[in-house]
Length: 157
Image (cartoon, rainbow, N blue to C red; front, side):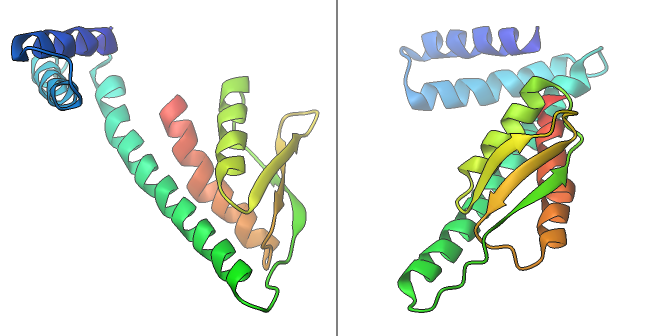
């Protein structure tokens, strides 16, 4: 219900300002989000809706940083004469359970340069990932389990 109210208030804001522009949409979202937050404090569902935006912004920052690091590593490897790749496939035990959680996690891993989600085990508890740079398989496994997956699940649950 809160997302729908935010949506409606954002477009009312745009109407009051005279048009739908990116600036009006962003400012309308900020104003309506803040207003709704103030008005609904203490009501059921408040923490769920208003807790997701900070988590989403944190995840976007984290994911952009991971994209930047991955791109830099691959660019360095392409531009230098020596070959630094140590490709391989590893199985990563996951906590994601639903089709949506598994799909989003696998797609975000695949969109990160240097990694590709290959398959999910029949029991849906292990995700198989091909990585171009596996110096320490346990470190990669731990990074996805402790940093990546919990952030994705926090957004979806």
